[in-house]
Image: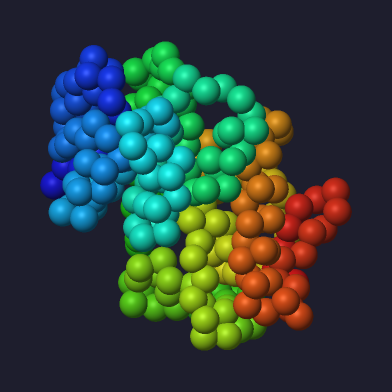
Length: 240
């Protein structure tokens, strides 16, 4: 079955160009020209991924991204925008964006980025059957990973701390999953970025720090007395 992609873009020319491009490359495609229309499509049939413009009539792209990531964290979202400001990119990462591409973009680059987020999404939905040598318990699709009072359930990307659910974005989930599977191992920013984003780390992207900070804040809201992720200065991060 083809991956289903939702294009959320109010510019007709760009929307139909993207539709033709994606269909030529084997994807099933729907088009939404506003945030409200996008929500209608998502409730009807959630896509595997979205290509989301920020400048939309009514509900803005930023508002739509926030709503989607709260209600459908499994949907991969690529932001396609003419905005190049680093602060905006960091803000969108904090809100859960999986990738960002600047308009006008190269179509081959867009296809490559889409393939990458879909690969990561597919890997995140898969389970394994093992007990990790570092002590984290793993299982299949219905299994769990446990560390201290954190429980990660691979089915539905569900994470709880002391029994209370924590809402994580896909990248936050994958980072925490990576660290929890190997609690005694220190991961460099390069290790984390290349594992989670599946791209070469160039040493300048602040994405890892932003996502680690987000994870810490969300865990601390439930159990502020516990420090889960330790910074190993000059090296990287590990579960404490």
